[in-house]
Length: 407
Image (tube, rainbow, N blue to C red; front, side, top):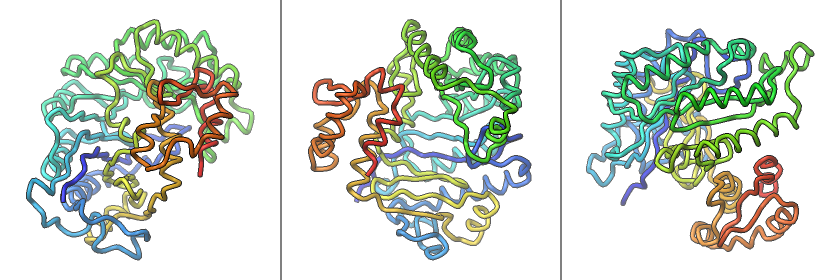
């Protein structure tokens, strides 16, 4: 039996402080659990057996003998999953010590057949990196750094609770270059409190001056229960209206196209085809990925499953020899077809191919003929060869498109 090549995702659920817009599975004030979490994480990786997947039951009912429990007894090369990518995200992975990150990477290499050209990414926040620490990452084989800059305006950074300054962001970029990183990705948020289109244009200009190989640009989303959502609801903070946010997105498309960037996914631009985020492409193409750490998610091609969220619970389960998996579901054929559409349409250049859809689902793309025809008539989709893809207007209204394909 062969093992499908996959991506490896490592979740580090710790932050120095929590941004006021964040609803990710992250925790501030739990630094005392970091080392224990790293130990549990390495144990989960080293025990992982790709031949044993979770059943459709919570971990409490299926705690022993599932995806991550028990030491794997298969050591031959045929049973070692091939890792095409490794992505260490969070949270703030860069608050870990270099030896802790090295330990995690060593566990990955011990359990997985890591491709020689694997893309190995670590997320970092400005203010949590140093030149020595970044050099240590490069020595360990990390070849891509993703910096959460979000803004290059100190007032805006304070307004959303970011812990770093614009100068620290620039210094982190310089340190990354000095450490030998030639694949640098920067994250920015638009639609921030009181932000104007002119201000966003200046942000894009400053971002390009840092010469990144990749840019991820996200519209601010107000998540229920977050401090920022509460402040907006109370009238203490004003956000740009939807039309202004749409203008910011359109401006980014124009500015980055003129700068020679490839707009390959709704929120992502690459300086060349070689710097497209290979790990994230696995998600959008519905290819397998294995997640490790508190709250990490996995997809093996047929099932999606997720680990227990809180680090304390995660550590306890691993110490007890139990699976950390808290939920699992089998993806039905109808759900798989829907996922192919709303994930595949995010890829702006290729969209969803008739040939690839048929190969994946043994049904033609015509199963969605009525939705596709209606969206083409509305100017939100277009045909390109044997594929359908979002139009420029469709990119602005992508959520309205995606909802048409929900099963």
